[in-house]
Amino acid sequence: MSKRIRIDKLLAHMGLGTRSEIKKAVKLGKVAVNGAVVKDSGLIVDPELAVVAFDGDPVVYRDVVYFMLNKPQGVISATEDGRERTVIDLLEQQDRLREPFPVGRLDKDTVGLLLLTNDGQLAHELLSPRKHVAKTYEALVQGEVGDADKQQFASGVTLDDGYVTMPAELRILGSEQQEEDLLSRISLTIMEGKFHQVKRMFEAVGKKVVYLKRVSMGPLMLDESLPEGSYRELTDDEVELLRTHRRASE
Image (cartoon, rainbow, N blue to C red; front, side, top):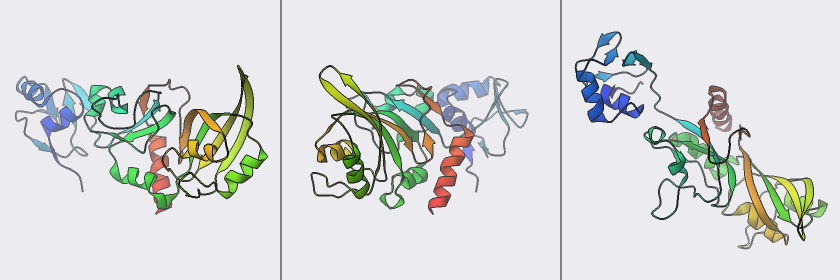
């Protein structure tokens, strides 16, 4: 069933002004529905059927939004915080109007893929422990990561609280010397999302993560052309990938 909505609320949700500004625009004859100038800012319309124009330009209503953020270091994965800068603070004001929230969390010092949406059902599907959604990270780890670590991760690692992780795929991408430290470049795919899980998994085998970046979550891949701290809307193909993934997991 379509969700009917007041025309002033629809236009405000699309970032075209506050409700009071929209009312003024209606009085000035700047708003049209189905080719006819609107006289009442409280007019109820079906956003899926109505052809809406503002100041002569067509308005396509989107009730649900999906943003891909390349999260930078130093911001927290929350909608609001009294002291810390949040990922929502990185959004333009008009993109905050439909109240998107981060799907899951990345640590304050972790960078990379973070999905922001107001689609609660999709968020639940991606975060549900029962769904075992794959998440892939790239990291720099102090010390030499070898085959023994790969085997350990593949069979499950016992964390500091006694929890044994699900099997994870560890790939060794190379190594580099940084001052006196040997750093291993790795890729790790896990099927769960425990608190600080990647860092704790390496701590369990006596190593320390010094840089961590998430590059994928489920079928969604980080757009590597997106600078840290920047975001964009998902493409129609990316949204369809997420929806297909949801249907496949039901």
